[in-house]
Length: 171
Image 1 (tube, helix red, strand yellow):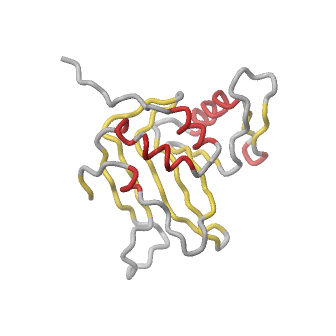
Image 2 (tube, helix red, strand yellow):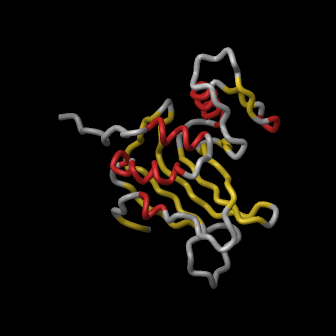
Image 3 (cartoon, one colour):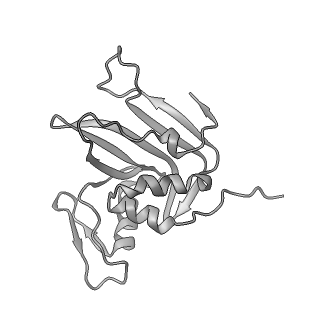
């Protein structure tokens, strides 16, 4: 008998659109969809700027037991990391995926009707038959990652992924 996969996302478009536009409602949408991600493993990760005396986690990765397919993306996990950019606290957040950077860019372009020019940013292709919006300049790509780097107010802590996902066990 074939094993059933996780349930489909209820509002996958909202989740992916919020990601591509780096909107704060992404976190609410992620929490609403937590059942679709099935069993997850929360992993603490040491960041390069961690003070050994500091007990708080600097980074966290959530690994999905089974890949979740949504809007042309195969998601295998979620990453969230507090980073400093030019001395300013930022939050790096997004999804892990087995796709390479070019494949992730193509998915974002097809989904939005925009073209990615790398350091030149995004341009909206008015001839495209897509949703017709330009992704956020804060959206970034790397092999295996699609996500955002957004400001983090001084003294404010990022949302804890443990609040957004069921925790089966921790390492």
